[in-house]
Length: 294
Image (cartoon, rainbow, N blue to C red; front, side, top):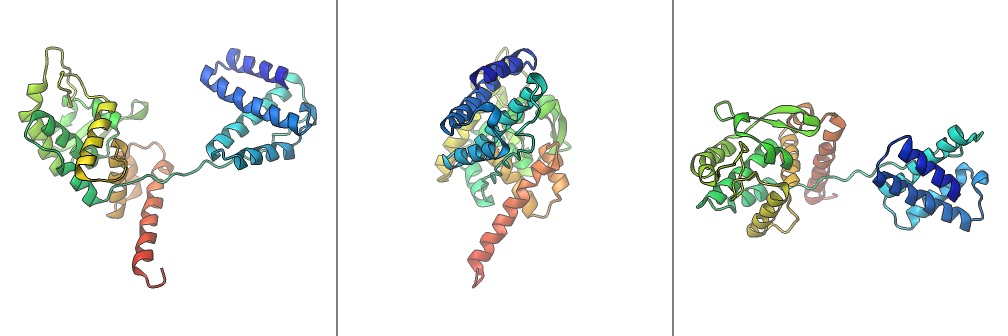
């Protein structure tokens, strides 16, 4: 099978223009499949749909995650499709292959009390403290991605109307409301702290480092970890966790899913629907705790 795999990889590189990383992933999957087929005494021309299913089951039993098994299945399917279209094969044994469903991981969330503890763990006696308090308030108040927070600019914040304009994935712009506590923290930071962080080449980004440059996602991650430890939170707290908490708490409070989709900047509501699963899991926990037969 090695010659056919090599020809297929050349096709991916030269005609499809796919990345080297993707080619390596496909190569790894197909070589693993070829080794398995060889152990099973199968030649390329003799492989049938059932053999491919057996291979994927073998991979799953080996402890591979569903997402990795899915990558194997995709590689095999496009490989045999190539053999039919370019090598003149009459039949494609992978034509009816069903791809394993991707796993749905429910996002972790903080409860409102934990969010409050996290925010209140930030001291406000220096410019960095005022900045970090405003940063945490805005992340939770508006459900921003950490990249959106880093790139937020002064001209896009309207303190009077209580809205901020952010640029999300795909350079899509959206207007997001800012809550009253966040507006108060932002005003304190902008009036009393940001001016002291400004340097000669500072840009218009809202959140600045002590060197006058915009904060990076890595730095924000570090800061949130520090404050989570200070607040005594015993779970892994990261910037996106505040976004998940924002959406889950809105849904739990009765907000419409379409509104949450718009606030989060999701292109497809199916992405937002995962929060309905989180809310249902919360209801299940309530029944288990309080119902006599839960």
